[in-house]
Length: 450
Ligand SMILES: Nc1ncnc2c1ncn2[C@@H]1O[C@H](COP(=O)(O)OP(=O)(O)O)[C@@H](O)[C@H]1O
Ligand SMILES: [Mg+2]
Image 1 (cartoon, rainbow, N blue to C red):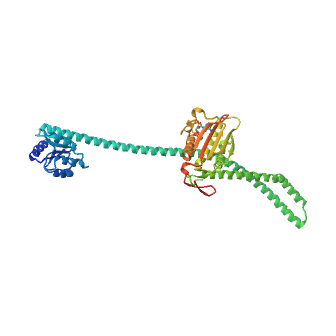
Image 2 (image 1 turned 135 degrees about the vertical axis):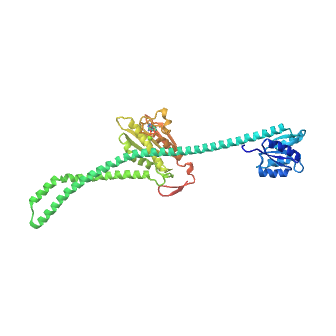
Image 3 (image 1 turned 60 degrees about the horizontal axis):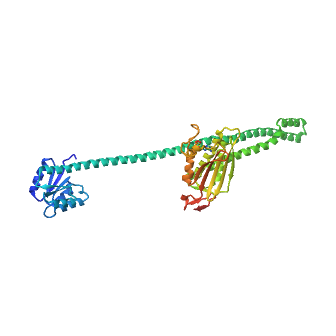
């Protein structure tokens, strides 16, 4: 305490007040005096002294009651009270302690004793003040720490989101390159066919105009065999008979090319539909698998055959984009596993869907190298990858796990395939707990409530 310690002395005996006041003032305390209980309480309420010295025996309100009132009041409860009692009066001392008194000083006053007892209280007040200060500092440190933990957690969450996004961007980038290639192929041959057809039509046009002229001439002046011969020569040069047969094939092939382009674009459209990116809606898992296979074709077509056995399954209530993301991850992983074996013949990816009671199941099996037992549990960990630096982020399966297990209350397991290779099994219940009581739009446009 930096200021002087303030002491209120309450005693009905002016002589006592004077002796004690003098003694304490000499010791550099700030002293106030009061001769009766009520006056003392009023003073305490206003000035809040550090210590009260209180006589037990007073007319009117005695010291015990004054002490009880001090202790009953929230604002003055902390003020230490030292009773002033006669040396012999042990009953007074006990009553004083029961009323909340801190200590006592005895009459007649012994200077050393009075000062020792008062200083003991002052020391205690100092220790308490220090303690309060430390507690306050500790509380502030704690609050700071909590704030820091909140900030760190938020930063980590942001970082995680960023990583998930990065993984998405990486796989989108990879798929985009493949898709560009897939689209380029039919566009190239439709373009080449188009150029050939244009040349053919130019030749035909030339011959057609020749025939028209010949007919006009014949009408006017009779036939001219030499002109006809010339036209026949033109026809031969233009390989008209061959071209007539070829045109049909060119159209058929181009039609096929357009179909493929439309097919890829439709799948891409289904895939990237972004209306309710994070909302659950009914969706056809079989169709999602077919779209996935179109979009990832460039990743697997050189090394794998894909077989599908898509069963009669119920529409799934899910976040379609997330399910697509899982399917892409699994198909691409399977293709990469097979590709990594560098074998002479193509490998096989098999995709099956079926119902198991009220659960929709999907198995994606490959005949690649399999996942060694030692790392089977680790492949779902974020950043776990056996691929070369820059080839894999190691996030695909951990994100897929989160999507199936946490976001769709499903199961996601890996098993060894018979004869080598890996099977990933996804099981998603039709009735996910959180869906109960909600309304869903079916793909046909009808609304259903679960
Ligand atoms: N079909 C599979 N066959 C063999 N190993 C696989 C297969 N799918 C995943 N893995 C293993 O799991 C690891 C983690 O996969 P994933 O989380 O998708 O990350 P990434 O593909 O970026 O490595 C892969 O590096 C690979 O070792
Ligand atoms: Mg992967």
